[in-house]
Length: 288
Length: 267
Image (tube, rainbow over all chains, first blue to last red; front, top):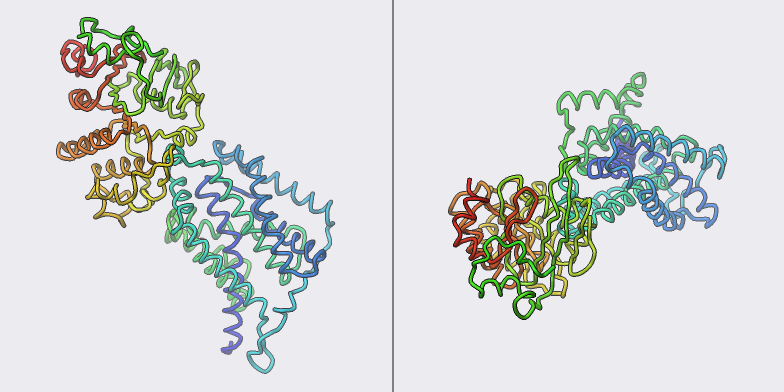
């Protein structure tokens, strides 16, 4: 592999890993802080992609679609938490898995009724449609770089939110002792609703950003869900920082696995998970 | 409700002291605002009946000792009044508002701060974060207790601001929870076994701070095994036996009544 192809694969790994981080961060927060196993989290990625498709058709511009879709996803998450997930906190994992698995089926069916089962494409905004030439016959699309930059900025923002703001302190405190947080006058239900809605918005954003490069298709949430759980487990449940590191590890393992060991490509991610868990059974970073 | 004299054990107490505790019956009624009130509470843990019709009240600026041996229902009473437990019968009023069974955060926002037994610090937050996350103005907008004032009150915490809450000694953890409760600028501070398991020197410092808090006008409910410390710090005392109030009167009466202490509090 020459240097330029190597560089392209590195950039691809970063972009893929960072996009996975957006999905996994919400999953790890909801799992780590509220103790909820949300199998429907991948569906939010799918919903985001379809929102991007629908809103881009409507407005003619993906960026406008994201600007509209992001608040929609947040509100959707808040309503979902209020109507369904808020009843799950005191239930055991089996009941959580049953409800959230049911939600996957419902979301897929609703999607099928609303937009059908065809595969759709979303056009890259004109502003970012160019490619940067790297050698005579290789170039790298600007849009993929934009995805990486946006995801990195969001990772930084999320780190700031959780580590530096009072909201973040309350969220971390709530993951340790709900009753004490309530006794300090903090509405823990509102706190959970915010975190859940934030997680939904991030997953949906990942779907919206990915729509132009992966296209929009039925079942796109499932594969992302499985990889996201791998990331949450590798990173350490509840650790956003761990999710970032794990997402990048998976991004590189998957991308380079496909290039270097095509025969084992499908296994690479799980091999990495097995190795990490043998080395650190609680994940790279223990709960934040 | 205000006539608590029916709970008194010692009816031979000086009339002056009686006037102080049962003003409705004796003299001009206590005009101070009722912060927290419980009426006829019956609380269960599963099938075990813990509280048997407990009445409780505390007014603004009052210092109240809540005593009784282990398992008599002190913590259950507090947890019921904080909205963590739903009583089978009876009610809880916070500043005159019905708050039976919570929500806890609303009770806290009405100016009630609770320092639970076992402290309840957040070990995954630094000392500074433990304090800052709780900061808010009081019910009347007062911001008497700032981060700086808590630091001045607990100099030991100031040296450990960046430490994780879990790295503190037991005494420091207790100071942190009291400091954190003060950051909410409460009108009532409930301390459940604040000195449990702490070294005598630390205990003395905790009592010094509690006296300072009391003198600043914040009402306090103090639950502690050390009855002489409690009666020295409080105006009024309540004794719980098997989920019932057997005494509610001036702390002085408890202090001067070895028989009462022996019967209900002695080990």
